[in-house]
Length: 376
Image 1 (spheres, rainbow, N blue to C red):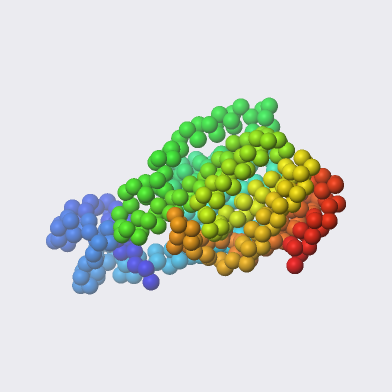
Image 2 (cartoon, rainbow, N blue to C red):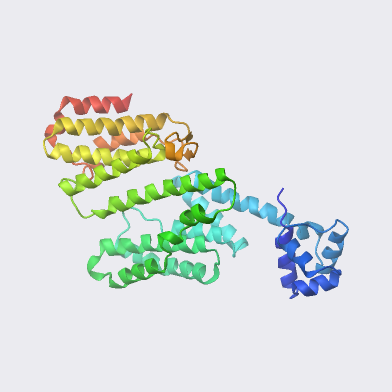
């Protein structure tokens, strides 16, 4: 059981409108002793606990923060349920009801508010600009509450990112009437810290610890940087059709980047991103009537995903820069079959807009052979 004595003492002292100096005088101890207790650097003697409990008119259990420990367990349970197991559509209402009840019980628990805001700003393919605008007043009310009252920078930054994601749907779906939303997105982005102020960068510079801990911090920062560069390259030519040479160059650059950092092919969860890249390269060659090159690229996409689905939930990198670093599957997708997903992506008509394979390419016997490989 985790004890939250320091947090409880600080809360009870403030509820009594007492300073640390005043409490120290009442207990005939030094001001530094009270400060150490509240930082959980040490605890009082057992004989002092009943005195403190009597002073604040609470039970010793509450003074020790036992209730807080149980509350933390419940909070972690609902956070973990969402983060590690994507909630099926039919259960999302039940989950949201549970989350709302927890928010009423813990109105200042900003981790729950962040999760709540993430669910509120989640978008589906049917969310038009009109539907997003209808939800905006409620979304903005929660957003303003978090920014005005939450003091945890990571949560504030996270909800700002979610707000940008939410507003950009209006910009994309209603480009002629989105001046206000565009201005707000730009304002939010300008408020965010730059790359050199990020946790990943600072951890490589100032994180105290052993040499091994510092090495791990650098490796994790490298992983984040590669992933960020992947997204940047993806959006660099976002308006270019996947059949023009500039798009092919961007994809080749992304693949070269991953080969540079993962020369042993231990891509881990990045395999899913590379799957898309190889598939789009195949599409480019197919439209250029270069079927041999197209099927070579498709073979690489299939090879990556078949290998990825056979991996355990956690792998350890062997490539030199990242050797020893564990790579976990994306939370909630431990049992997800990307092999089946790739088969659907190449055959289902709902993906036709994403992958419009030329008819002659589909009729090539090698296309059926590739699908058979995914069906084994």
